[in-house]
Amino acid sequence: MKSIYFAAMFACVLGSVSAGERPNVLLFTADDLHAESLGVYGGKPADLTPNLDAFATESLLFNRAHVNVAICAPCRAVIATGRYSHRSGAMGFMPAREDVPDIVTTLQAAGYYTGILGKVGHSTPKKSMQWDYHFDQQELGNGRNPELYYQRSQAFFKECQTHQQPFYFMVNSHDPHRPFCNPAKLTKGAAMPSQIYAPEDVDVPGFLPDLPGVRAELATYLNSTRRLDDTFGKVMQALQEAGAAENTLVLFITDNGIAVPFAKCNAWFHSSRSPLLVRWPSTIKPGTRDDQHFVSVVDFFPTILEATGVEAPSGLDGRSFLPLLQGNSQEGRDYVYTQIDSKAGGAAVPMRSVQNDQFGYIYNPFSDGDYWYRNNNEGQTMAAMNQAAQTDPTLAARIDLFRHRVPEEFYDLRNDPDCLHNLIDDPDQAESVNALRDKLVEQMKSTEDPMLAAFLNRDDRVKVDAVLLATYGVRKNERPLAK
Image (cartoon, rainbow, N blue to C red; front, side, top):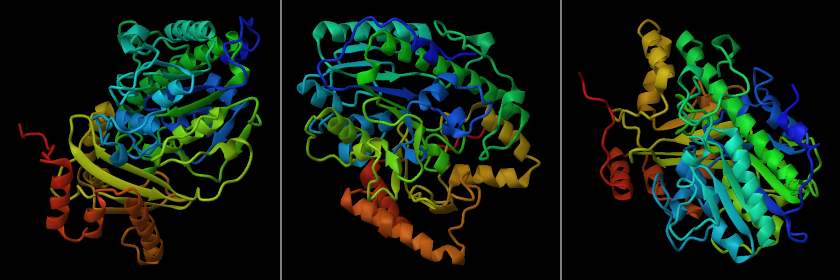
């Protein structure tokens, strides 16, 4: 089956929306997408994402891309501000400080017309940050209707043409966020994906057990992922028809990993790993990939500004990776830093992580042996795991790790990207553990991370708890009440 995207390449060009040589920017985000769901990242079934796979043939694929916070709202605040959460104030589902510069206001001041589809609240961390054009979830078929995304994109490009301004357009699919697409229970306004999948089509990620209940839920996730791909194809069709594709820098990412246990809302490898596809016909060599450099969404703000020739405000934590888009190398991209502070519902479960090309280290200051962690991404998958764990002690131990954690985790990501074997106490890894601890301290000092004091006193529970209380206030244990 030919993708919508390739079909659009032959569509009629209706007129350019670009202004002079100033490039447009289109940032397309998926919501809770597992990076390895894409065919170009080795995903199965291989036909799941035909539009994105076709787009990749014209793009630069980054193999070491990450989000800095694996939760939707704080991740998008990092994109908007170019700062880590504790540097902007958006440490969870809370606003950034008004004195923090944002990408929309900065580009508007430089003459750009700005638009957004979907996830408007989560992508707008400041009251003073106002989009020129905006439509949210309920106006887009619950954020799950490719045709409505197409129509709204067409209208935006026409407005840009009328205003004769270059644009910054953030298009946010609400797929494949829960509730996953069950054809028998379509959400009002949502469209059917172009293909439906069954449990036997599922390639269960290695960080989850292969159970019937897990497969059943992940099949509906595949449906949602296919609809995401349909939406992406329709937006790219609208861009092509508007005559703007040649002068538009397009970036595709997810805001965090899949919404199941051991991924979203955590600091493991598959929590923060993101697909990153970047197309810019005037600059990027089609069908290339970068397997060397770590990039993350904190870098998007400075990268977009340098690409558009707009002067960057002071105080950004990110660093432009424009040289990588131009086919060059770049020093200092050997590590990525990720974090969690508070999540939906306001519970503070701070985590700090640093990864390099071989290892990943995680510090969990909230883990005290008693605190019981949960999130709203567990669903049928966790229910199936809980049932199987009644007779499977290995799975029971894994669930216990999920619920309670340990203060420190260390994984060999080359051999164990699913983070199944914590090597923190392995004497053969002591040197590597200490090296990543040192890198984390360096990062925490340079960004004035309030969790630095907890980390430096990590063997003193009283001092750690005092830091958590001072930073996040009262912390309520999330263990459900006994029935």
